[in-house]
Amino acid sequence: MKKQVLIQLITLLTMCVSIGRAQTKLDTNAKQFFLFTYFVEQDAGVNLAVSTNGANWLPVNHGKVVATPQVGEKLIRDPSINLGPDGIYRMVWTTGWKGKNIGYAESKNPGKWEEEKVIPVGLGIDSTNNCWAPEIFYNPQKKNYMVYWSSNIGPWKKDGEGRIYYVTTKDFKVFSKPAILFRNGFPAGGVSGNQGPIDAFIYKDNNRYLLFYKKDDNTHIPNIYYRAGKSPEGPWGNEIGPVTPSTGDEGPSIVKIGSNYCMFTDPFESDFAYLFTSKDLKTWTREATNLKMSHGTVTQISKQIALKLLNE
Image 1 (cartoon, rainbow, N blue to C red):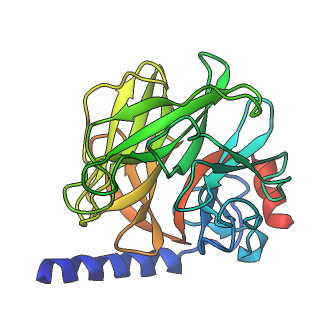
Image 2 (cartoon, helix red, strand yellow):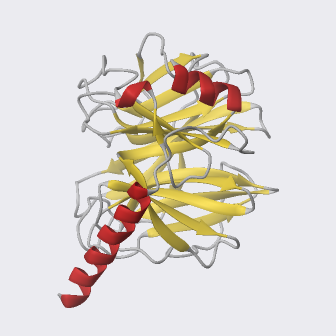
Image 3 (cartoon, rainbow, N blue to C red):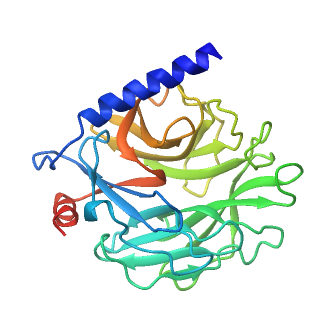
C-alpha cells in the first residue's frame, strides 16, 4: 500500500514538472514535428496536438475536436492517423463497444476531415462482436495498406481468445478477407489472468518490423511487450518485455525522435500521456507529458503541416 502511494506521489510530481514546462509556441527550428491523435471524451470526437520533442504538446483548434462521431454507435475511441505515400491522411477509429465495423475518413489536411464512413473489417469473422483500436500501416513490400485491430473470439473474459486481425487494401474500397496478424492463445477482457493481445502497433525498424501490444490484464503490472518480424504481416519472433518501469499502460504508439525510440501510452495511473524513451529497446526511461488524453497515436508530420494546424 505504501509503495503504491509513493508511486502515485512520484507520478503527480512528474506531471506537475511536465505541465510547468509546457510550450507556448512551436519550436520552428526543430528537426522533427509530430502529431498526436487522441480522444478525451468518446462521444465528443477527435483531438489533435503538435510537438517537436514528444514531452510538450500544443493543442490544435484551441483544444476543440476536429471531427465529431457520425457513424456506428456515434463514438470515437482510439483514433489513429496515417499519412500515405500518396499524400493523403487517413484516419480510423473504434466506432463502438460492439460490432464488426471501424470508422474511416480521409483528408489532405488532418485538421479537417471529409465524410465519415464505416469499414466492416470484422464481417468475415463469425465469432467476434468487437473491432477495437484500429491502426493503418503502409506495407512497402507489397505497396498496399494494412488495417489491423483487436477482436475477441468466443466468450468474453473467460474462455475466449484475444486476437489481432488485419485486412489489406490498395484503395480503401476493396478489402481482403480478415486474417490473423498475431495471437497467443490467451483471453482478453481486462481482468487478472487475461494475457491476450490488444492495442497492437507496427513500427518499421530499419530492415525489420516490430509489433508492440498490450497483454490485456488490467491489474497495474507492466503489460507492454513486442516481437520482431521480417514482414509487417509476420510471422513474429519471441516475445520481448515487458517495457518497464510501468504500472500498466494501454495503446502503445512508437516513433523515433532523434536516435531514441519513443513509445507513447495511455497509462492506468494517470490522465496524461506517458513517454517511454530507449536507445536499445531494452532499457527505458519514463516521463509524463503535458497532454491530457485517452488512447491515441503519434505520427511524424512536416513542419508545414504543423504550422498550418496551429494557425487554423
